[in-house]
Amino acid sequence: MNSQFVIETQNLTKKYGKFTAVDGLNMQIAEGEVFGFLGPNGAGKTTTILMLMGFCEPSSGQVRVIGYDPAREPIKVKKVVGYMPEKIGFYDDLTARENLEYTGRLNGLSGKLLTERINGLLDDVGLKDKSGQLVGKFSHGMKQRLGIADVMMKEPKIAIFDEPTSGIDPEGTYQVLNLIKNMASRKVTAVISSHQLHQVQKICTQVGIFSKGKMVASGPVDKLGREALRKGKFNIILPIAQLTDKVRDEIMKIPGFVAIEIADNSTVVTADDNISKQLEEVVLKATGLKLQMKVEEFELEEVYMKYFEES
Ligand SMILES: Nc1ncnc2c1ncn2[C@@H]1O[C@H](COP(=O)(O)OP(=O)(O)O)[C@@H](O)[C@H]1O
Ligand SMILES: [Mg+2]
Image (cartoon, rainbow, N blue to C red; front, side):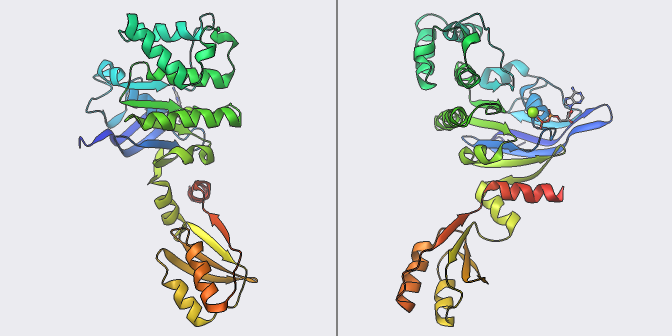
């Protein structure tokens, strides 16, 4: 397999008896990506993660994580890969700091290095003031943030988060996703599994859509959008239905233009970029009218729904 990717699978398959949970998965994740595993419950996201970590053995196919085979070299993989399971296990009767100390010691840290790393991470996740509190008293969102700090204790090359935002409020979700995004800017490759695509897509550089054990689509969010919808990513709506041929021709010359359609009392221009400024200029020049335009951007949710309609 190619070593330019930090995670790579070939025909990766996991069967439980006769049931196939992961079905011939081919996936490549490059360094520094924030890769979203998106899909409904039961699609095979967690099973895939468990195979990446070496917690569960593939029935067939291959996995490489930073060049290692997780089933054969699980310790090497765990040394460089951080994993936050869906249900994080902290010691409720220990404080946040004591929990991180425990993880740090397991990873061979001690003394000043351990203390400094914990202080830095507690600060990063906004729990500095709560470091002496028992984790049993933490809210779900606080536990998730502590979980991120916990994953980062060993300064991993890859960090994998299984449903990190499930069950937390919008504010907590925003904090958790922002933390993961910031972390990724420090050269960590992140994998996030989620069934809550509209929140998670915002921080992903790439996504893979899982359905019934298969990755049915993958790529950058905007590329997926265009392919799935077979048109541009932006709809710009002009509040007039009559345009002269000359204006139409001018509009069609704008870079990024994809299509033009007349709807009831309006004209819809579809484009790869938000070309509303250029449209405004063209219309202003031709007609002297300064029009209010409405811009709609396609969300991954629409893409995702399309795949699910087909599956
Ligand atoms: N240990 C197991 N034994 C039998 N079936 C399992 C086991 N683990 C997962 N499955 C099944 O495999 C499918 C995929 O599960 P999972 O990977 O947890 O999906 P996701 O994380 O996308 O919700 C589900 O139908 C689930 O019931
Ligand atoms: Mg899962």
